[in-house]
Image 1 (cartoon, rainbow, N blue to C red):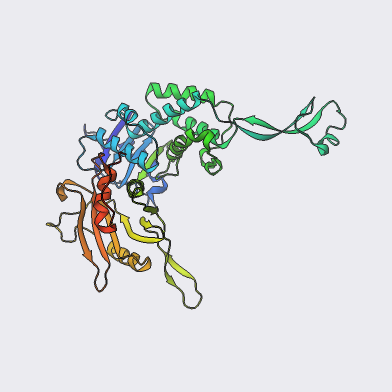
Image 2: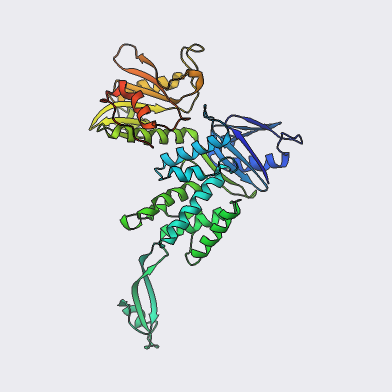
Length: 435
């Protein structure tokens, strides 16, 4: 099995050299990458397949093809080694999905030797095994059958037509407690898909045991699974994290899985979407103690209204809106980009389009406090938080540029809350709340 890891935007050459990936492996990996919807119309949104090698973009995760795989890791400044980056990426996914991932379980992961796909498959298999030992969920589903004794209700139409010549049989309609429910169908489908991609023997053995447990549960193909029909309540709340993990691994949360003639499988994440979801979750927790709410991808106000027809166009969806009740205190967008030091570029690499977008948000949402939030790196200095503030010409609106250090997990809530305090006027900082 040929396995390679690269950072986003990095180049990996192919050929016969010791530091190169074989050409056949590069071709298979590139084909699997092109099959992903994240590849876009040109097919290069995940990987650029050049004449001398493959170049990653800002999509991270694992692309697996027959006999080979390529792991793309995010560039997180301040972390030492690929294992630390994998651990932080898993933590970001857990926070973004609101998964209960205990520190002990995270520490036990072999992030030095296992790639991201293996780590997530292992987490899913272990947690599913724990949940199944406590009992597989079941629900009453409608059944029909021709029985020798009445069960439930009699079906008169079938009784006096189809069974007219066999009066010893009764056409019954009844409710039976069955494991054939959408929740179990999703779990079985995930076990089936992941069994072929786990490399660790202990994980494969656990998945085979789980496949036996779910043998009597029919499951549609992964593309036809009905996540929307899964009902979680107090009786089965412990399955919520598993549903999120299954959706993550089967597609639909930040990423997509794909297969085709190359027998490829991809577990890919758009870092723009993941960074936004992570910051939204952390910020919501951080500001809850101040009585503030955070709305992600909300607002949805339109820029233009046709004067003749009244129809609206160009709907906006700011990444984050901070509210106190109905009052909007801050509109912010997250950017998975690397800011430049001010000594090198007075604009710090902030794009003109992003500034125009924030100015439009200020007008549409009647909010004078606007922010762009970027990942922090050492080139910006030691301190994260508020980097600069700018007044918009001829009005009172302000656009702030902030950074958040992803390399440090300590007091992430309070660090983000402290950085935003000058913009939204939060009261004195309370005791830190650990993630």
